[in-house]
Length: 330
Image 1 (cartoon, rainbow, N blue to C red):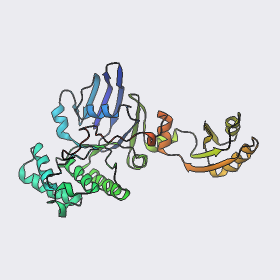
Image 2: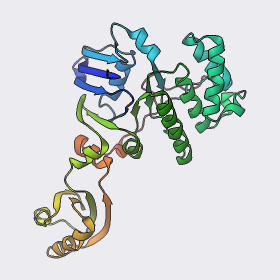
Image 3: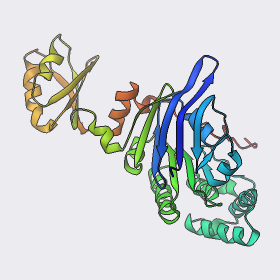
Image 4: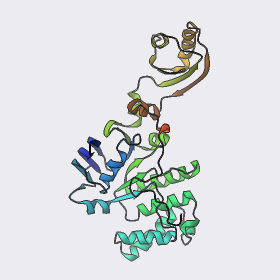
């Protein structure tokens, strides 16, 4: 049975279709990524899956239960780690986990044992009696993950789990998440603006735009759908009519996109074809002022389907689930 399954899921706000007949499945134990520009429908979709929002039509099942007819059962079987840090700053880490465990009616003895286990796993055992207000960002994020796992959920929803963390803390967080997934067979539903995370971690990725799933597959297969394995970007001294057609005539050049004085070329074996490209540009008396070459990435896939770079998207510091999460003292 899929961990998450939607059928023609639709949400309409007035004349705006935030979700437009969205259908997909997330398999049990899968790491599933959801990517999309701001306003594409990610927020609406995840709020429906976590029973915060009702759909206009269509169906959604999470952990085998319909989100409309059995929302309370869904909530007991999911964990949520929101983008906003929502642990109580005026409590210790132990107190935070203990209180959260009580929400799920975990028996006291089992709950206290689970608190100690999780604090140990996330490296906070020695700091368990310290107020969360004294924690660094990385420590708080590890506590948030432990809290989301206190009731041993079947599915863990992660909203931008490493945003704002330094590279070392991001690696620690993902090592922890991988460990929990492996040990407890948890299904992971992830949103992120870090393309390298999605490309490295996710088994499959869905790209949503204007309320529709426009692409869904493994990172490698998504990249294979774009012609050419390499990308060369050139900043030219000028653009002359016919340059794009001439470059496309070179065997191995798959696509050419011109944006101002920037030429982006998708091609096979870029290092081998670069001399031919330079020779072709000389015919137009155009100088190359800057050049870069790289392999195709998930970012290129995202741009192809949405027309935007995810780096151009503003990373809003507001959680999909709870809101801004600003502590009262601030």
